[in-house]
Image (cartoon, rainbow, N blue to C red; front, side, top):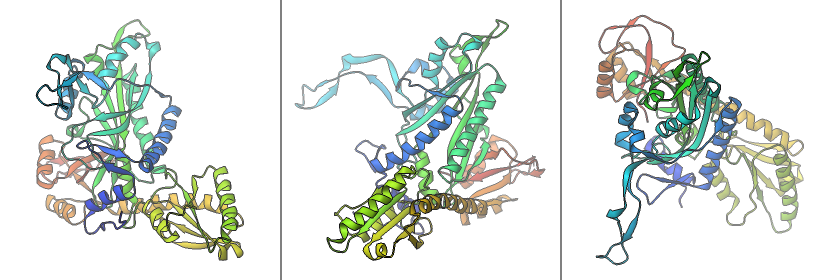
Length: 492
């Protein structure tokens, strides 16, 4: 396959699609709107998943698993949630196929095998989980209940793009129950902070923490907290959400507990999740026209060592040094590969690992080894240096930390340079068309104004930042009074 990528400046969308496929993260599948996550992409997801799972457990959460199928009656019990997802649901109506009597070798749905009740294929699990929690929670001693599950979900999207929006995707969803409103809100905020820490510290993507406007909230939530990231093309991407559900699901499924005074109360709930969409964010925040740029902390492969043989007699000498270096790096917990495969020339391998975003490439040749040095190339800056073999493992370990920080700093500078204040609607439109990014502007707080701005600009309120300062002003669209600025952007 040609490794030539569409340039970002020529067509950002095609560049993204090219990169996902050619770097072997994922591929299109025979199922409409679904993707195949290839081993390299799945290794990346595993690194993200494992770190998040550790962070969840450190905050007291445990994992469980709930059914893929949700009976329609349970799904519709919380009306707002059901209505919010109704247009995206895949529904199972029958449980058997049979041979088509009129077409040999073909199968048809057996009309005698109709389900008594339709099953919704999990678009989100609040309904099945809260129906289950009813049997688990009786007393305040059963609270808080802090459960997460790693699963797949199905949302029947009409327009799809690998990782960013697919009919089926992988995610985690936390669902917690609490004795008080204050505890539930504290949990909601805690988890959005966990997400922000993960995305910034491991993915090297700076985010803005905020709350959604009423029209952008999760269906069935009283408040939705979010982290918003900015991609290189100036569009925003919602990287994670945490929802304060109030008592909505507890009331829908009659989940009550006896408090310390033996009085029956409805529990308070949260839910929160991130998905494989984070891989899309990673790609679009950091990568370039040569391929992926992977932050070392979650890169499937952190260092690749490529031997450059000169005649058969050089192979044993180079291999001995290469394997020793690999062992030293593995002892430090670094994910490293020694690529002595003979299926391609070194130059092709260099290009391949650049495309895949491996943070550090080490080239081992006889002339360098005779001088007790190696060539080290870093992916983020494309700089090459000749480094002494003495202490090379420690040098590479420190360099990985330096690369991680540099990737974050570069993304942070870009993000900060692309948050712009607008005081008039015309100014906002011009900024969106010419620059993109986050537009900080006053809004009168009404859904009517929000919808009109969206219709005319295709920009939405991404969030009301948690660290917002109060500032008297007038709405850029309606001219009505406003007490704070919010962030608008066009988004994925």
